[in-house]
Amino acid sequence: AFRDSIYLKDISIPDTVTAIGTDAFLNTVWLDDRRAEDPLVMFKNLIVDGRTCTGNVIIPDGVEKINGYTFAMSTATSIFVPDTVRKIETRAFSGVDDLKILRLPEHPDYIGYDIIGTSPLCEITYVSREEYDNGSYFSTSNKAEYVKSSDNSGICGDIDMNGSTDLSDLTLLSMYLLRDADLSDTQAANADVDHDGNISLADLARLKQYVTKDIDTID
Image 1 (cartoon, one colour):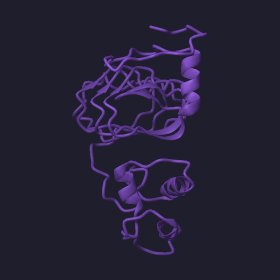
Image 2 (image 1 turned 60 degrees about the vertical axis):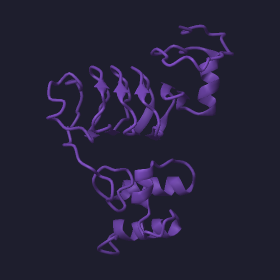
Image 3 (image 1 turned 90 degrees about the horizontal axis):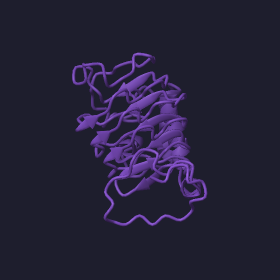
Image 4 (image 1 turned 30 degrees about the vertical axis):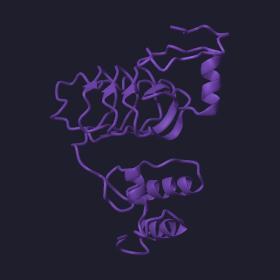
């Protein structure tokens, strides 16, 4: 609608608007300003843009739709999509060269064609190969590894929800405590390794002991 309107700075979006097309605001001053505020640009329950996202990206609960090419050219290394997302458009995660882990809802209503495109993805979680076995959902041009649908909630210390508790979880918890990363409700529950209802340096210390094999169990 407004794509390539390079001098467009002010946009008033009425509450009656319920959908915004792919790249509707690309190459506008308005989008640049929104990205400066938060790289995950949102409107209501829709992600408008995520192209400047970096590192571990957690889409907040309440988002229901991700447009096509939303994260194209971003430097995200992992993207966590909450179960509230019901629709993921074609190539939503294409062109994310550093992407290693993509967590998808277990039963979305719609997934478009080739959602990861050419991204060199190594792991997809919460998606059953049997459930999406026609092959049109994932490109054959990448290194995607299909991981059978499973519930990684409740695994103590598995903060990045990849099915194991390791150094990446320790790094993510450190970033969270430094306020450089956000955690979903499930991730926060997994981060509370001492089960005192709070996420603190005590959890970080115990997680470090487990990762460095100073203790045999973390629970």
